[in-house]
Each structure stands twice: as structure tokens, then as C-alpha cells.
Amino acid sequence: MIGISKLYCGQVEASDVLRYGRDSGALPSHLLQFSKDKKPVVVWNMTQRCNLKCVHCYAHAQTCDGTDPIGTDEAKTIIDDLAAYGCPVMLFSGGEPLVREDLVELAAHATEKGMRAVISTNGTLITKEKAKELKKVGLSYVGISLDGLRDVHDRFRGVRGAFDKALLGIANCQEEGLKVGLRFTINKRNVSEIPGIFALLRDHAIPRACFYHLVYSGRGSSLINEDLTHEETRAALDRIMDETRALFDAGYPKEILTVDNHADGPYVWMRLAREDPKRAKEVFELLKYNEGNNSGRGFACISWDGKVHADQFWREHVFGNVRERPFSEIWDDPSIELLHKMKDKKRYVKGRCATCRFLSICAGNFRARAEAVYGDEWAEDPACYLTDEEIGRTA
Image 1 (tube, rainbow, N blue to C red):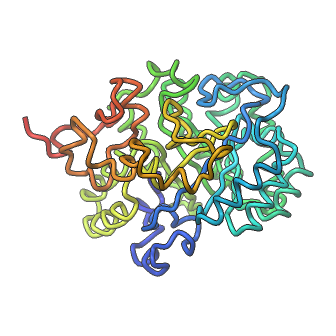
Image 2: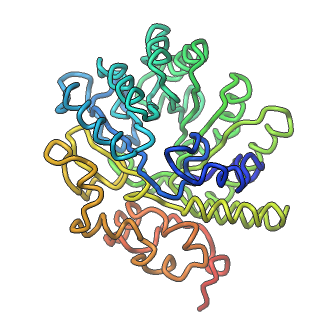
Image 3: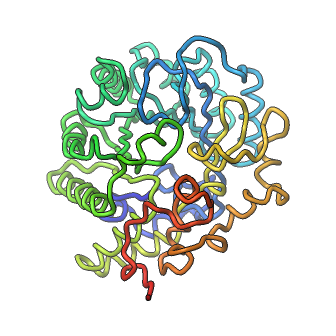
């Protein structure tokens, strides 16, 4: 996760992070990525059920029929363990988390235990009443997926009217004072929609947007040929930075992040080195605090059936099951070889990653993409768009 507005537009200084001792339990949400202890943010895909049919769903979501393997009481036991372990954030995802009738109850339980509770949703089921309930239990944030404007988004979601329902969900959250933001997965089908997303942020007073790079997982694996080329990715990053700066200059500062390609960090730094060398030096310190990809260390995923993964995209590797053993025991078990190596992945990456001068601030990028393309979890990330010259690689 790379904070474009934090880094490129100067929203955060290194001193802001140091003021809290870089302790994840003390850091406010917008600084959490710079923590030193890297207690994991946990995504719980609490259901595989969903009311939409998204073409790029990493979870292979199913219809709304049926039940979920983990019930309310068992879920609370899992949350108790996560809270006691020190996990700062519980992110309820799916499928579509709002198809579970106990979502509000479980979010309340997480906040009562001292965790920050957030949800990742398609937004179509957030009625006025549901927004009131979510606000009442202290939900910190609602991330709503929009993959373009009306026509493009509805094609992605497989249901006509999904865009308008998502906008209504956003409005319902705003009416209750819930912080809400957008989630946009970049690919060839929708990259031209990026300016329109920034217009939505401005016109609808939405404070935050996360732009996700495509990860080849779940149904998203079928879109591998629709990922951007390296040149297109660079152009998209430049466009995101330009649009972010334009909103700042126009008096509409927004929190803008890119996710799932940590080459973005060095790319932002290199651009700042040309435009503002003094700020570039500060940004490099922040990127060192961030440490790049944190799958398997500062980030974890629990599936709907209790399986533990390094992140929500990489389900080929299972480290244990919270229905059989507490997450806290699984996460710190040195006998789980791959998980243990993920805690210090910089020692194991190969290819361009191994000799890259930015390894300390990228950590080898995404292992799920490396394995999907090369069949080797330690191979270089094929989505890294930095040139050999930029990463300091000699022939």
C-alpha cells in the first residue's frame, strides 16, 4: 500500500510517524502502514456468498444461498484471539460481507475488543438503516468497490444497476457520518476511467480512494492478459499522481493510495527526486518505514472456512486453520517454513528482485503474481515495471 497523497502531496512527514513510536497499537489509521512491529491487519473473508457476479473476484464468490461454515459464536472466539494478539484492524470482506446477518454484531465485538473494524463491500446492500447500525457500533471505514463509471462498472459486476446502488450506499454512509472510500482495480478494460473516478471523489465529497493493481488470483486469473503493460502501468501511476495533485491544488485534498504493486514506492520517489529533491529524501525515509509488501508479516487473511493465508489473493498456500488452532499460534510458528520465510522475504527472492537497489523499500513485491506466472513463489514479480537501469542492475 503506497500513499500517493501522503508521499507525493506531502500529507505525512516522518516526524508524524515517530511521534507515536511506530507502534501499531498507538498509530492512527492513516499512519498504520508505517508501524515498526507490523502486527498483522487481518482480512476475514467471512463469506463466499455474494449478490453480484464480478469478473475479477479473487474469492470465486458464490450465490447468496446457503450458509457460512463459521457461525457467530465461533467468529467471536476468533476475534478475541486476534485482539489479544494485538492485530490492530479487522477487515470484514467476502464475497459480500453484508449478506451475513451477523456482520454488525461481529463488527461491534471487534471494536469492543479494541480493534478497528472496517468492511470491504460492493455497497449495494447499504441501506439507510444498515448505515445507521454500522455507525452505531463504531465502524472505522467502509471501502466500496467501483471499477469505473456506470456502464463499465456494471459490466464488471455482472449486474445492471450495481453502480447506482453503490452510489446510494455511499450517500447513506455519508449521511450517517461514516468514513467511506472507493476501491478500483486497474486493468485494460477500465484504466481510461481513472479521471472519472477522481471526478466522483470531488463531486461526491468522497475522501479516499485505493487503486489496486491486478493480482492473478481467483476469477482474476482469467484477466492476466488484460493486465497493463509496464509502460501502461507507468502512465497510470503518473495519471494518478497528476490527478491527486490537481485535486490538492484545487482545494479538494483526498487520501489516495495504490495497492498491490510496491514498485509504486520507488516510482513515486524517483519522480519526486526530479521535482522536489528535499521532499524525496523525506519520502525515502517513509518508504523504509513502510517496508514494501507485508503479506505474511503485517498482513494476513482468514478464509470463510477458517484457513489462514499470507494475503487474500494467495490461497494456494494454507498455514493452518483457526477452527483447529488459534491464529496467534499459527502466525508465530517457526516450523511453518513458507510463513516463516515471508517474515523476511528479502532474503529469499530471486531474479531482478534479489539485486534491486529498492529491495529494502519494496520487499520483492507480490509473491502470488510470481508464482502464478513462473511457478516459483520466490521468482521476480512480473508486474514490476521499473527498468534494469532504474533498479541498478548491470548486464
